[in-house]
Amino acid sequence: MTSEMHTYFEAINNQEEERRLSQFLNGLDSEYTSLRSHILLMNPLPSVDSAVALLIQEKAQKWNTKDSAVEKSA
Image: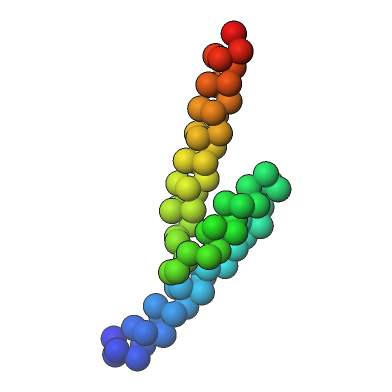
């Protein structure tokens, strides 16, 4: 494979990954607007897998915050 072909296929793969990331982010509930904005400002854009990991981290943080609030009120 020539260098030009490799560059072309790499560009196609990057476009597809960006499309998948956009599709994933657009499907998020409105409560994740700030996370969506944060991800879109990242340079380079993360992979879909990395974006999912960030979402899981955000959900875990919200869950832990909610648990702490419940424990303090009990």
